[in-house]
Amino acid sequence: MATPDRLACMIFDIDGTLARTNQLIFATFNHVAQLHLGRTFTPQEIVSHFGPPEEGAAAEIFGAVMVPRVMDEMCAYYRAHHKEMAEVHEGIVPVLAMLRRHGIRLAVFTGKGRRTTLITLEELEMLPFFEHIVTGNDVTSFKPNPEGILQILDTFHASPRETVMVGDSMMDFMAARGAGVGFAAVLWDAYDRSRLLSAHPEFAFSTVGEFEMWCRSRLNGGTSS
Image (cartoon, rainbow, N blue to C red; front, side, top):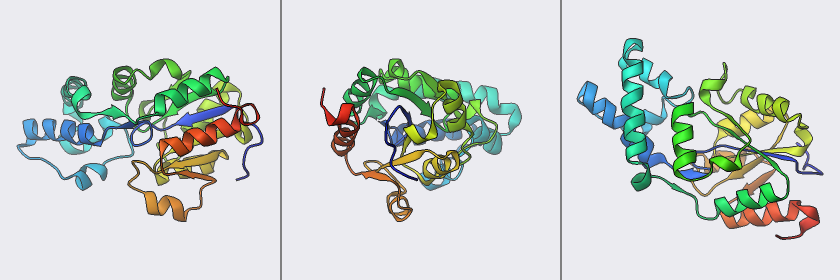
């Protein structure tokens, strides 16, 4: 994938990219597991159910009939404990504000369900930055399928050559490849760091500061704001 000559659209993952949320996700999952199964799961066991949104994991573990109740309990716990267990990565909000000031179209493509997505974006005060949000509830094929990215491109009438997906996982990378957009691997909270680097993404950033500097270099010929 060639480096885009002009940056017009950026699509962000949430967990591990915009925000540090793993502690909250694991605690939420184990809260309902303890309630209904009398047990908890390891982080590795929980991660193995990632892909579909939370409803999919709930159906697999608790049964389809329990999904509405479990989802209500999960979302209540998720919101109640968000401030103490989750945080935006330092420096991300100023980057989003800078991109918007320069007219870059911003969107979210996440595997999270819409309910938890909106809780996180609202609690961390990032919701106003994004013009379009695609969650795991809004696609028929989940990451690494590129459906969500293609949906955003269609909504914005954006060119893949002027679009970059920003994410921290191989699923994000593969979705970007499938949609024909550039990919920026952010490594500050990535479980897939070594795999991401071995996949040779167009861009890779170890810190938010590095990412901010790159964004500035793509705006108005490198002028700062």
